[in-house]
Image (cartoon, rainbow, N blue to C red; front, side, top):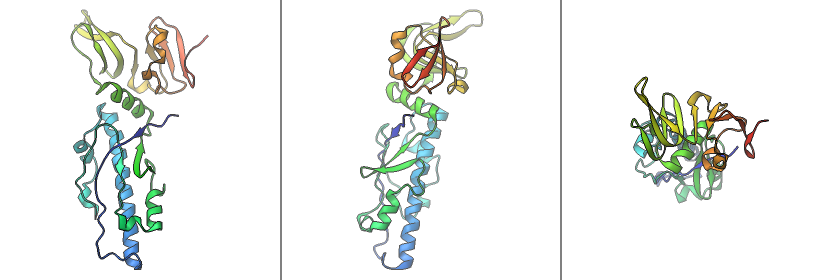
Amino acid sequence: MKKILIIFFIFFSFSFSLELNLNNFEDRQAALRDVKTLILYEESIAKAYEEYILTNYSIPTLTQITSLIENISLINPINSTFTLDGTLMKISYGLIDEIKADSSIKALYESNTYRKRTFFRNDKISFILEDEFAKHLYDLIKQSGEIINCPTNSGTITKVNCKQSNHIYIGVTNIKKDTRVNTYEPDVYLMVYSIDKFKTGPIVITADSTEYTQSEFDSIPKGALLYDVVGVKYVKTIDGIKALK
């Protein structure tokens, strides 16, 4: 299963007291507790990021992320001023040089101890999305922007990903009006699925098989059942979209 690495630049300092003596047992234990606190805060950022995508179908701002977790000022001693750089998510290395110089504390921080959603790599702390639907939404949003409400006017439109009546429509290029009930709905699209059926299907896809190599299909779960708009049955495999005979 492909892992989506989410990278997010957060600049904060891990400011231990200048009086901290790591040769002193009590100071050393305090430093280790603070490292654990920092790791758990990084974990909470990763969790909040994923939850926001699943709820709002968009990439959160820094303010939106921090509103979902405990105030960083409750974690002592960490500077609560940090910045977010676009949709590439990576947390800057959290230990100051004096603490990083201690090999055992550094090893704890860079290890997977206390980490489930985050990991150390290349002097940064990265995190992944655990939920398949969140990974799929992230791919769509990163490629095409926020998943909006489907347009309510008929006719040809610029390709868009949108949501309507608990369904996600991908690659919509035309909207039609149902005159019987006076509503509008997409009628030309790459695929559509009910949100609660994403992981298993059925997913309705275009009949144009040349489109099946588009990146939008990459994060469809393996084993999901698909039907094209004329009723031909397919399944998502490790090798792509395959027709069932």
